[in-house]
Every structure is written in structure tokens, then in C-alpha cells.
Amino acid sequence: MSNRKRQKSMNFRVSEAEYQKIISRMEINNITDFSAFAREMMIDGDIVIISNFEQKAIKKMLADLGRIGNNINQIARFMNITGELYKSEVDEIMMNQTLINTHLRELIKIHQNKKIGADLNDKR
Image 1 (cartoon, rainbow, N blue to C red):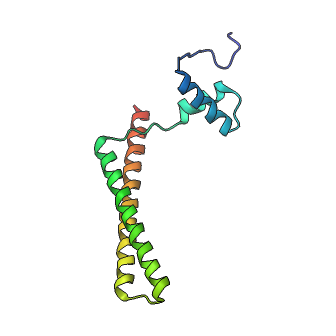
Image 2 (cartoon, helix red, strand yellow):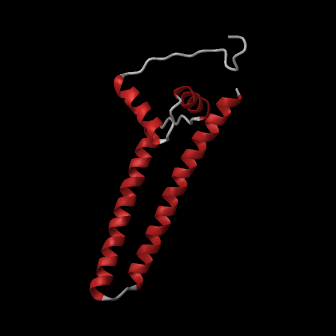
Image 3 (cartoon, rainbow, N blue to C red):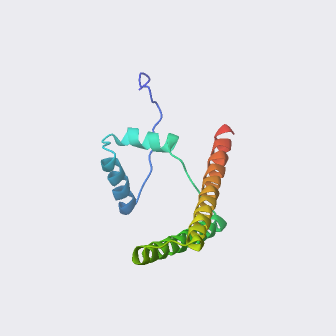
């Protein structure tokens, strides 16, 4: 045992559903060595915990993005039917694009804050 590179052993239990998820992830990634997979996930895998506030913010953003997509589809449908595009529709598309960009920046900021928090925990 003293000649082994890895001398410590870790064991844990999982439910049948958890086991199937693990096996499925391994198969999707063409990994057959569970020890290597577990080490990689536990050492380098990211753990993201989303607060209730963030979950609500993300749900709101997704709902807004759905409405924006609907607005753009309505404008595109109008253009296809009439062959015309009015300045008001262009302005609405631009406003929707700005909203999408704002939402994406907010999501990136949430992700970066989670990553910074995880990095700070690693340094402790």
C-alpha cells in the first residue's frame, strides 16, 4: 500500500436514482474509470448554489426573455405579411435587444459572483 500514489480511500453511498445519474454521466462522457471520474468531479467540479432571490431573478429574466421573443415574432410576422417595417418596430426590436443584453449581463454577474465565492473558499 505504501508504494501506491494514492494512499487514502473514500467511500460514499448513493440512491439507485443517483447511481443511474452518475453512470449516465460517465457513459455520456465515455468514461469507464469511476475513480478517475469521481476524483475529477470532486476536485475540479464546480458547485453552484443559487439563492431563492437569484432563482426568482432568473425566473423573471426567463419570463421577460420569452415575452421579448414573442414580441419579435409578432413583428417578424407583421413584416412577412405586409412587407413593411416601421421605425416603431425597429425601435421595439432595439429596445428588446437592450433588455436581452441587460439580462445576460445580470446572469453573467451572478455566475461570476458564485465563481469568486467558490475561489475564495478554495483559498481558505
